[in-house]
Image (cartoon, rainbow over all chains, first blue to last red):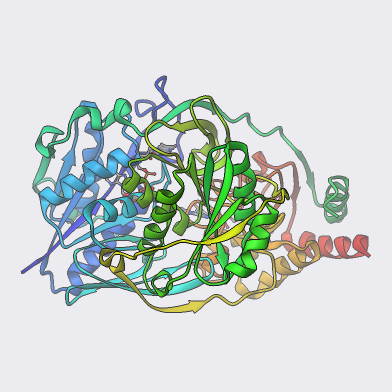
Length: 262
Length: 320
Ligand SMILES: Cc1cc2nc3c(=O)[nH]c(=O)nc-3n(C[C@H](O)[C@H](O)[C@@H](O)COP(=O)(O)OP(=O)(O)OC[C@H]3O[C@@H](n4cnc5c(N)ncnc54)[C@H](O)[C@@H]3O)c2cc1C
Ligand SMILES: Cc1cc2nc3c(=O)[nH]c(=O)nc-3n(C[C@H](O)[C@H](O)[C@H](O)COP(=O)(O)OP(=O)(O)OC[C@H]3O[C@@H](n4cnc5c(N)ncnc54)[C@H](O)[C@@H]3O)c2cc1C
């Protein structure tokens, strides 16, 4: 039986652009270009490597929960080499929080069928880094998360998790949820052939009805968290800048002493 | 007064500083009850009591060390059932966030991660977050269930507030389903003797401008003269000049020290995401146009190989 890999990818506002909140305190998506979260490229890459290591005996489905434009993120992942895509899109999803997103992802993953779910370590907008753990809890399967090195073989996932105080070698039986860090290996660029092929790959769109989720379980209304205010941080007041002409270190030391750091 | 569960981050009973900060924040919203899992509670309890823990719930089982995350969720859930707290606070480490997330699903609650402040509010605790690479400050609260909040290191100054802190054993049954991810082996990180990066009051970081592993001692010498931790940009880490555990930024550590010194770092958005909330920022860079200079309180345009060693000497001579 061929290995079923589901890769969760998020469509996010470009971090190098001017990111804003909209009036309802959700992310303003109209004002800034979106893209496939760069950290999810590492997840797609590892899925492709797992497939290659299993002699191509695997099917990779990329899955996103997001607005209409999120198909761009799916197309990018398909052009890297994923086989098919699932897009969960519904007006009622606007404003969904992490708990809600994990509910939708878990139902979509179950509907798609899976042996291993691969996620990024964190999105580049919400940056919570909790979705993989939430998914493992909801799906009732092991989590092998924050891996800097990963392999799937013989019905098992193995990998290395580099923590604060130790580096751990992990092992879990499939099905499992995996998340990979940006240390797991550079993501490949889509080739021209990949980009052309992506246009013909299947992309399925699902809504909340398809997943038996009620509108009030998700969205701003259903959210477990509420943002009460979002204020742009005042720009830092422009500091002193000196050019080193032999006195730079002395001047800096003077500043540090004035601030009581030395 | 309502009780607040505080998850204790420790190494064999040596309580890490972020936990003391959590206890301080917890006292604003209720009475802190510390949850200590694993060995060393006898060492930890007096420290926890000294910082306001009215009670210490303790459990030790081999499963905490043998399997990833889930057994600790079982234990925290047992503590939750025993106490019915008004909130649950955990440190914003990878593990703290994952434990908090899974607990939130189980108890039907929302979760807020990476809070930099927590206050009492009319409708429950209000958490401040610093988002979009610290370009926005948000205030949020949890509307369903018991608030689960993870808090970043250096978010509060630990305050002593002696409390009873009696140790009570917590009965924990680790479910078979929680033994899914085996920890096959563990290689502890060697200590450098320098302060922990996320907890340090001063951080000195080097970037691509350091130009080689063999030059990092220049950065380390400045750090040592200031009693600081050493950080690195991703460019320096990817080049193999410094360990990934020292990376500062979006995919590395996020630091919020009193003083951050960046040498040979341009200030890309992903680097800024991890250091922009530092109180005072200093940069040394030979390019006057480097974006890092937009953030600094004090900047020196110059060659780091001239400025950094000379600064180290200045610091040493001023400190006597
Ligand atoms: C600035 C900001 C702050 C926020 N703070 C909170 C908060 O405190 N509490 C809260 O409940 N919600 C919060 N949200 C909402 C939350 O980010 C999203 O609802 C949600 O998608 C989960 O969090 P994340 O994006 O941080 O994902 P992470 O947990 O960081 O993502 C990890 C991985 O999960 C997968 N993934 C995440 N989202 C999707 C998706 N939509 N589709 C497919 N795969 C996905 C990807 O593989 C990703 O790499 C915040 C959003 C923003 C923009
Ligand atoms: C998804 C994602 C996540 C990322 N996460 C992180 C992260 O966590 N942390 C991080 O740092 N980056 C991260 N990055 C990378 C980031 O975008 C930048 O590439 C990186 O921060 C650049 O590092 P740097 O400033 O050291 O190098 P450069 O940008 O190359 O800058 C080097 C600087 O050194 C100066 N210089 C050179 N020689 C000298 C000298 N002798 N004296 C003084 N100055 C000198 C130069 O003028 C230049 O400004 C991430 C990128 C992506 C896409």
